[in-house]
Amino acid sequence: MSNVLKPLSNTATVTSAGTAVPFSSTSKVVRSINIQADVNNVGNVFIGSSDVDSTNGIELAPGNTMSIEAPMMGMSGADDLDLNNWYVDAANSNDSIRIVSMIRP
Image (cartoon, rainbow, N blue to C red; front, top):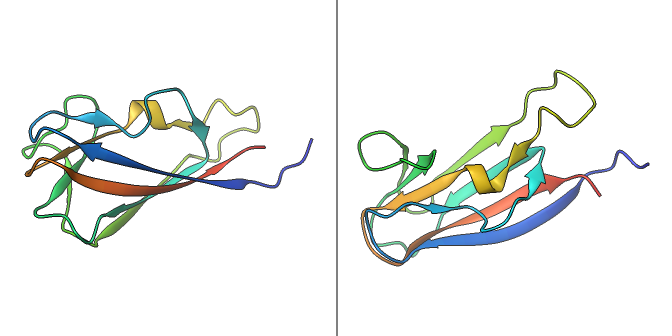
C-alpha cells in the first residue's frame, strides 16, 4: 500500500444564506482540508460543524484561506477527517468555498 497522498478538489455552495451545507454530500475521508472562500463571494462564509452560523463559525472573507490537519496520533486512519462532518454557512446566498484535500489512494 502506498503512503503517497493524492489531492481531491471540490466546492461547496450555500444556496440559502443561514443554512449550513456539508463540504461533501457523501463520506470522504481525508488527511487535511484546505479551504478558500471564493474570491467572487458577496460576503463572508463561516466554517464549522453542522450547527455553524455567523455566531459560532470560523469566519472567512472572500479570498481568505484556512487549513485543517488531522492529528498524527496513529497510522490506522482513525485520526483522519471526513468532509461530510465539516460545514459552511454564508452571509449571502450562493456564496461558496473551494476545497482541496489530501486523500489516501
